[in-house]
Image 1: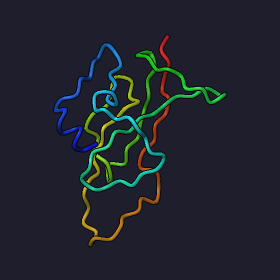
Image 2: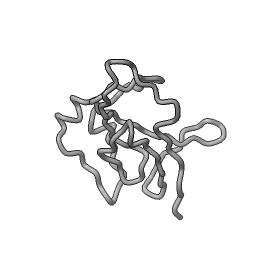
Image 3: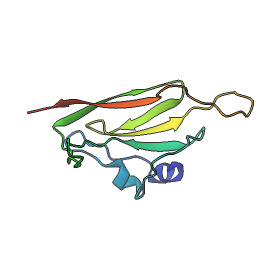
Length: 115
């Protein structure tokens, strides 16, 4: 994802319609679990499902809120409704030992459905 982000340059981030960073960056496959690597760039995407686990298509009338632990992540971009975020993992001096976040470093919630 880091190379895709660098090669695209400036992402289209419309204030009138929902821009898909996933499409612009050419991200096709998603992993269910992943390890964050310091200095790398990642796309985080939130989905919305109904009670029967059907994915709901998102439009500009939906708004998400998010929390990012700034100790670990730096927010670079967010789209109009806040369901796609591009972040980089901050580097830490930890003597080449693995760093474990013992809490959630990212949370996303449905904030509002505008009518």
